[in-house]
Image 1: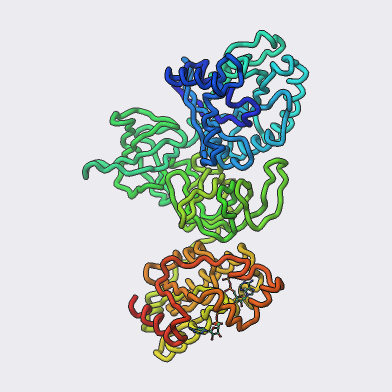
Image 2: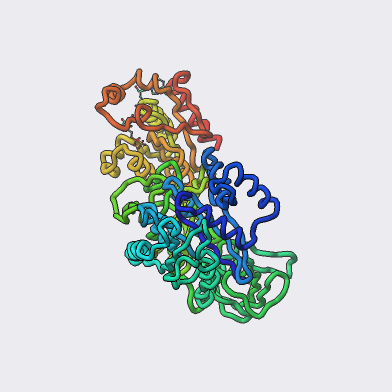
Length: 607
Ligand SMILES: Nc1ncnc2c1ncn2[C@@H]1O[C@H](COP(=O)(O)OS(=O)(=O)O)[C@@H](OP(=O)(O)O)[C@H]1O
Ligand SMILES: Nc1ncnc2c1ncn2[C@@H]1O[C@H](COP(=O)(O)OP(=O)(O)O)[C@@H](O)[C@H]1O
């Protein structure tokens, strides 16, 4: 029996809980103990006098919300003789946009509630934009509380017309249902009070709407979840079919490698089958011994999806910390996990009006169109074509929190026209020529902490030993390469991203590079570190307390910042994130410049 996954959008005031409660009640999805509790709770907390208050079935979560407990999504399960259902109940308030987006991301359909007494509200528009952005195309407009407007047809028609204009703008197919969750009108049974309503009841519609049939007719896509090797004679590639059907003998391609072969066996569980279809979990064996690992995608050989490393996407930001262009995250798409950098935030979308707005940072619950690049080629399909291969989440590499959810629009043309040029000389050759191990020595610390002075002293020591070095200093680089950048968070992110790439090129040239930038954010220092092989990157924390830096204030910048003449000054009104595990920790109040330089030199040679 197929499963219909749907999300309910609206607020408790719109009667969402009562409607879900009634669906659970009428489909007998309530267990005995829940029923007896509901009777007790209805007497104690109910709003329906002697009658059962069905809302209490669902509102338990409301109490948790009021206690500030983070609610992702509350999933409810029920079934009728025709179909099984999973309903995602998410809070309607703007601060829970990310919860609704999470619920919508796996839903086939959205039930959007409108209170007949209020009509289409701003939040109705927001909910509709969110579900449209998450790729949902089917919407039920549940015009609820019709009992409170005397089951008036004109009221219903006016709301239906008003909403249809929005649905047309968003490309949503809408089934409008006039109902009352409280009285049950048109939820399961047809309403005796609205003979003028000829459409389906809510449950009739939910039971009958066709499900994901088009996915079966698409070309084969199997994101490989894991490789099953119980013994040397069997290698099975396991996953959930994202599209198409698969049969033994079918010609397939392994992406991103591009190797071609054929399907040998199709297993569902332990049983061999002649065919498996989209949505089913399968194990496939191949006719040839080819290299396939988790994250690869087995696809129809003649109709492969694209592979690229630069994209445009719609992104919903989910984290309290704003998104800043230039930051690197872990991107999870289907079964692939890969580093990705948001290269630009093209514009933010006002979820209430759809207006496109310029922005350099993205706050929590905001939606935007962005471009991003991946550290290696990514198998994908535009979200409108395939939700599994077109949707992704972004995970913060340090906190491991999910910070964004996105849908790919398309690959950027430049992605397919830039090829990594194989060159003869390499880093090892250039390092051997210089008789040294190339290194990136990354000095981080407050302004005036001593980065430049110590780096300069170290540079002189290395030069005297015949080393080939170069210093990249924040102040200096900002007069040239990064003269277009200021000191906003976004600019500092881009400043460090660029200089990390420059340092990588210099290390690749066999040099020992000394980087002396405040580099205040852990994420960007981690990004820099990630560009080098293990042991090549030495983080030096020049630890000088703010008071000492302010005491020194060799450039008078602290005084200016204190007078309010210099904004976004690190340590005053801009954050500095102390390194957690630097390779070298310099306490400049207890070691002079020479001692600091010597400490770094020792670390360099101890590496
Ligand atoms: N608002 C603000 N905040 C911090 N620093 C400022 C600012 N405005 C100018 N300066 C001068 O710029 C130098 C820091 O540049 P960086 O590129 O190292 O900063 S960052 O890494 O982008 O945060 C820094 O040089 P150092 O003192 O050598 O660190 C300052 O002299
Ligand atoms: N280890 C140290 N002990 C005492 N003073 C130091 C030390 N390192 C640097 N200084 C002094 O601190 C001041 C700021 O140093 P600077 O290298 O310009 O800092 P930054 O590059 O971090 O802004 C300079 O006057 C420098 O001589």
